[in-house]
Length: 428
Ligand code: EPZ
Image (cartoon, rainbow, N blue to C red; front, side, top):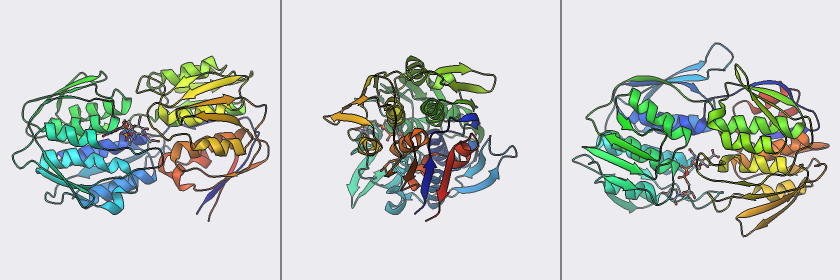
């Protein structure tokens, strides 16, 4: 297994192109199942999860033609033309679903267009139990008959789905996306109340509108969908990755450097920008994106994760790495997932002072310096928080289980080393 070696202590300077958002790209790819016409997606990031989704869609009859990198060095990402021309293959098998929970996103569109779907239950994962009950309950409310058998969800709607008023008891990005896709082909009106407002949900909704869907309330917590009989082809560019942006902003901040994040959009990440500014980091909009600079001392700032527009859970680990070297203390509270502090013991091995209380909040007492160590993490954002710590630490940091990083960060070592970081991949 590959490892990443970092020799820390270099302030990063330069520019980093921001890739298309993984968490927007995955549901957008699943949306191709809603029509027999071609959905062309551009600005797709080059990531392991995107390849997994492509394989899964291939299993369910989608033909995909790929156009490598766009000419300007990957700034506009890959282009996929996805055509769900073959009907009849409606199974998402366990061996693919278990590697990527977002596979559950094929359930709504398969069921809506083909009247049946068999999708493996994803099971738990490192950051929490992550059930899919809200997806299943919502689809039942649209008239689907759902049975769980042998680890699979068997869903049927032989006469099609019917619109309904669905109020989510808790905000869920994935359930909102699954139900939104299903509702576009349901008979009559569907209202999704207490819907997730994450930019990736709006990106999906905008793409569905480009495919002919009738959706009102995009960007709000109430989505109103008038179902139609068929969707059609569209060309759509995936929005920039706000979590990748936030991660590289934290890299500039933790190393005391200055990075221009090309293609970044401030309105996708105001809570993160507010927290960075409060901690003493300068964030300015430029003609091409955002510039993030830190030249003074970092200050401890509290953060609590919440659904959008609150502070994102997917930035919690990275912000904690930053707070580990700030002046004073910071209280970081995780409200979305029950087990998302796995980076804490590893950061402590690098010299951080962090105490976790009831798996819900962490008190970070800033230290003057971290020191390099051999570390590993069990999920994507936890792993990248160790990269950030390694960039600031004295000495060498060796990060194991790099495959987590490859799921969500395109060309991480290239992007960082182009800005002066001493970082290399050791093939294993
Ligand atoms: C999406 O996951 C993202 N993944 C996650 O990104 C992100 O952390 C999360 O949203 C929250 O922003 C993708 O978009 C592919 P949820 P999702 O449904 O949709 C509970 C990353 O690092 N819940 O909003 O799975 C659930 O257990 C990843 O890129 C139920 O109880 O998240 C969690 O506590 C990790 N029942 C909360 O809701 C359900 O049926 C929010 O989960 C569904 C969810």
